[in-house]
Each structure stands twice: as structure tokens, then as C-alpha cells.
Image 1: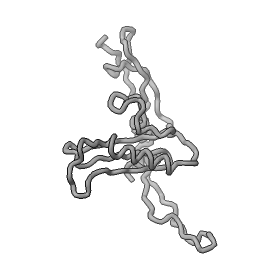
Image 2: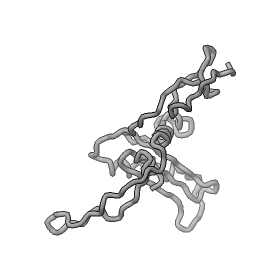
Image 3: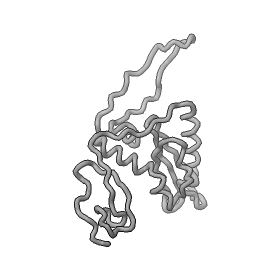
Image 4: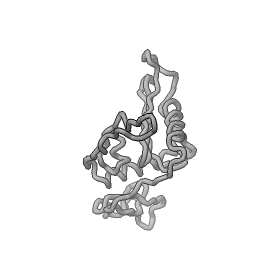
Length: 184
């Protein structure tokens, strides 16, 4: 539910156990009321988190550019591994689906160097592909109030003419840097 708020533009999501009840002819005889999601995160912040967690190039130094976290459509994901190799997990989402996977031993024995990317992530990847099969691809929709600004990669400030490495970054309007890089 916590990650679902990011996928849902900052609105809370209340998981539902039963989607509907149908009679023997397939007619729906009961459905729960649609859950009302409260705005719990600024939609701009939720979108920035989605952008960070779906940035394949940012995770390339650790996961390579051919990461198992790529599912052929926009998706955000986070992996984790305990320092003692007992647990690892991957939680990831698209605008339509959130899936969390835990991997570990039921008796709490440590795994042999199995991390979130090598343990839980392949399971997450395959589940996402199967569950999204035949569903339309949707991108995370950027809300109003965001701006994209070129910055110096090293300082995070506005690049001066001598800054060798630059990239565009997203900011909530009014929070973008105003000072120029003094490192170069």
C-alpha cells in the first residue's frame, strides 16, 4: 500500500481482498465500494520518486543497463538485502500494478550471497510480465508544477561554461538551483 501511493499520484490505496462475487452465470452480484484514496503525498513528490525509481541509467552502475528490473514498459522498483543475507526483497510498480516479493529461507538461515537483484528481482520481473500481459502500457503522468533544468552532475548546480558533465534533472518548480557551479 505504501508503494501504491507513489503509483497512484500520491493518493493512498487501500488493498481489497475480494474484487467481486459472481453467480453461476457470471453475473456480478456483489462488488465493494470503490476505495477513496486520500492525498497523502504531494503528487509532484510522488512523480519524482517514480522518476528516480524507474531511471535505468541511474541504476546501471550497480545493476547494468540490462537490469532484470526492466519489464519492457515504464516501471519503478526498489531492491533490498539484509547485511547478513537472510532476507532480500524487490518492490516495484507501474501506474496499474504494485508487486512486492520477499526471498529468504523459512527457517531464517542465511542465503549464500543472494541479493535483492539476484533473488527477489527475477521473481518480481516474471510476475510483472505475467500479470501485465495483454494490458495497455501506461507511463507515469507528470503533474503540473515540475520543471526540468540542466545541472552540473558533480555539483548539482547550474552549469557554467567549464562544467564537463551535465544532465537535465526534474525539480518541483521553485526548488531548482539558482546558483552556478563554482567547482569548474
